Amino acid sequence: MAKEEILKGLADAVVDMEEDAAVAYAERAVAEGVDAYTAIDEGLAAGMQKAGDLFEEEEYFIPELLLCSDAMNAGMDVLKPHLVVDEAAGAKIKIVIGVIEGDTHDIGKNLVKTLVEAGGFDVIDLGRDVKPQIFADTAIAENADVIALSTLMTTTMLGMPKVVDILRERGKKDAIKVIVGGGPLSQSYADKIGADGYAPSASEALKLLKKMYA
Amino acid sequence: MDDLSPKERLHRTLAKKSVDRRPVICPGGMMNAAVVEVQENSGRRLPAAHANADLMADLAKEVSLDTGFENYGIPFCMTVEPEVLGSEIDLGTVACEPKITREIYPDAASVVFRNESDMLKSGRIAVVSEAVAKLAASDSDVPVIGSVTGPVSTAASIVDPMTFLKDLRKRPQDSHKVMDYVTNFLSAYAGALIDSGAEIISISDPTATGEILGPKMFETYALPYINRLADYIRGRGVKVILHICGEMRAVRSHIPAFRADAISTDAMVNLKNLKADYPDITTMGNLSTYLLEFGESDKVAARTEALLNAGIDIIAPACGLSTASSLKNLRAFTGTVKEKV
Image 1 (cartoon, rainbow over the protein chains, first blue to last red):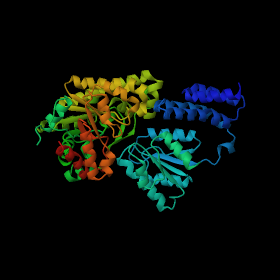
Image 2: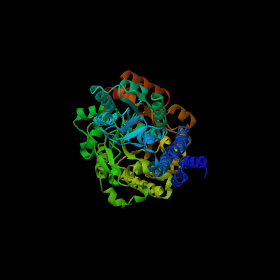
Image 3: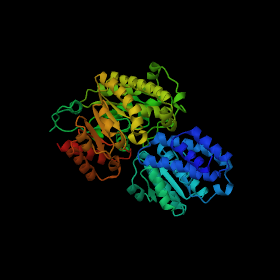
Image 4: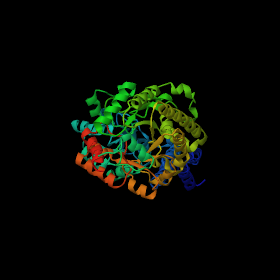
């Protein structure tokens, strides 16, 4: 099978939410000696970006995007062991992401994680109901570039400025950018709490990061 | 001068009859006004009031008295249903609403279908029912609204929500079984609240949005199961208020198919346009909860007046209120509706 055919097969499997096909094409890539990094980047990730576009165009919604992500990850599991190490360890921008303390709604956060990872960023996921201190500690310890905070609830929004304050106290406010998103938030809220960016949706979050690190 | 009692006014509005002025309400559940200031003023505090019928009923009365909302609305959370169905919950604090700490089932296929009459005896169903009964027996002019979580959100509160959303597409048979089970349970729970004296049932289904599900899944799961729940409640002679979360462009054309007596929407939805496009809908909403928390009270009053001028039938907050919202703003909100006839 030609390399192009395999790459297209990988991308289509992701867009079509076909986990089994993603695995089959990934195995094919390995068998035929297609470079694992290329297979991920031009195959799986390209498919996920296409899925992200369909999401933005309101052709796909959250169930579809999650299934695309599953297909991508299934293919990834096959390809990852074949990655040449220095390719994998490039200077990726590192993002610490999570849902702020008090809130357990994590659908939005998971979408951002999926799209941002497919977009080539390195993501550390702290999960949901995460204390402000943990965000700051992890980001500092991991030398992260960005903290991405999410919440759906107005009550828990108030945890967000705390993260900014902790970074400021520890002299890391400039080194670590804070971006926020979620139902009740807005650009004006982000500005008010001293965050570095706001995105109204998962695809906008990816665009925002790409703009910040172009 | 008001000619109608709050009870008559709301019932007449839901029956599409003429009224002296618009009602202003906050139905409870996800959308409740048990803000910190009311709790402090009354000494009736959460989380205790989530689990004690006397406190719950008293707090509901204090909310109405203190804020000016013209109804009693309970419970003050969306966790009664998932708790009964087996999920782990945390009742929160004075300022933080209860949340689900762990959904009990990993996927739709794992859901164990429990006996309905056992479920009706478990969790906080008795607490909410008793609180409804106390409010209904208090012989006031204030309508008692019982709030239930909608079927999609309830299902996504017992099955891991990420897997649940995928299962909707990937395993439709298992998903329909879970939706069927949850809808039967919710109908029985709503029935128990009606038996206790709830005059109106409010359904909020925040996971059932166009943004999350998309039009196809919305039509397959949200619409039929919400309608089945609504049909049951209306079959009992009780009116239904349905709150749809989010920006609903993707599913807007489905909205008239809901068999509810009023449709409440989020702040980003233009209710005036919705009403213009679908004149049969009784509209409810939709003052920004962001404005209620962070805005100045004169701005709150101005936005409220705009809602009145836009012809919205029932004035209400657009979404769940922050517990930090000030009484000053809530009073500006309800006061404006009562003054501007």
